[in-house]
Image (cartoon, rainbow, N blue to C red; front, side):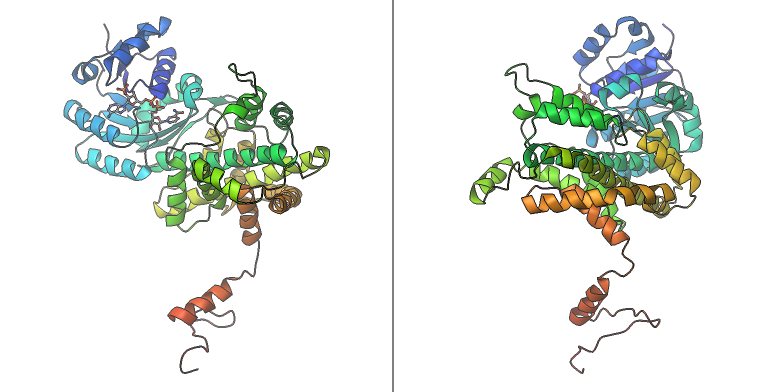
Length: 472
Ligand code: NDP
């Protein structure tokens, strides 16, 4: 049997589909999974593609079945399992072999692994993959971090398996070491905000307007034909239209209102905070997920406090267009925040992240894919050195058109007790960002009053103290 060109460890949801995708593009691929029964099941279900797959029961056989220099993709649970796999690979692999971590790694782990492996002559690539099961099988968005030379060695296969947007591959080298995993983390942060804002609008339609899932689904389906066109809006419409096979009720009505999280949204927020970049819509979305998990407490609190007014927003027809625009404005602010975080990281780590390319490789394959990302890519292409998406001329026009609706919806939601954490923080971000004279003059004064931190003046250079010390 001829040797494989590439190897993949971890045949879970993502790994098995990625392996089939790689095999389908005509690449002979060796596969290994810790639990060998999973490998057997995978091979049994691989159909014609089994001919391109080389299963191994031990890591030694796995490595021996790949032609050197070997590229090996690790697609296992993020964290310690990745370090465990690397520890084994280190003993078996040779100089110039490449280890590619394609899971959702923390980019700081990726930087550490890069350094450690570089020290012993092995090459490491940290690669963000988005698109879930379907994307992995038929074309994900692929965000690569590592040396350009190592990317060049695997570029052909990665381009072949990636999603295509109007023929353009959604795969690119984005920068050295942790750049790919950092961009994937921010992708996921934006995904959290996008999903949360959609859920908030669903809440207004359900609790503020008394609409049923099927009717709400029709609203989202209509929006999917317009400016909000995206995978997340498309699946929202599909989810709202689906019925529970067990009860016949709309499936959303029987699903617990408590969502989990694996950590990438939280990482995005932590990194934004560490760099001092406001990412309020992402922060609100992560916090909203945490609050969703506090189901018992929320049930207790709902019995303690007066119920927020339901079906109190009046005629749906007068609000639906505003809700569409509000969601659009919130989305623009959230994406602007995500890109601003990447801009800051690019400077901090000297990555020189290509913003237009990032937007371009998110246009297909990944969970936040949308036509809108094409507009973002154009904004970064046309305005080199753009510090914030909100300042791109097209986005100024879009925000000016959509913000009144966002303001209206946030205000009505607040009046009626409908929670809109991500949308309201997006609005507050926008209002703060465009305010030439803010209120931090007072914060400066307070800090100086209690801590003698000093303050800057508008009319003179230097540090000053106020007339509130004991001697004044
Ligand atoms: P699954 O839970 O489906 O599979 C996990 C895989 O990891 C299995 O192959 C499992 O092997 C292996 N594994 C777990 N612990 C160890 C260990 N200690 N040593 C060796 N192997 C281990 O996970 P996914 O495929 O969903 O996720 C894989 C990676 O991809 C994660 O980093 C995830 O965050 C990321 N990802 C997931 C996406 C998704 O939509 N699911 C999307 C994008 C990225 P075993 O069979 O022996 O248990």
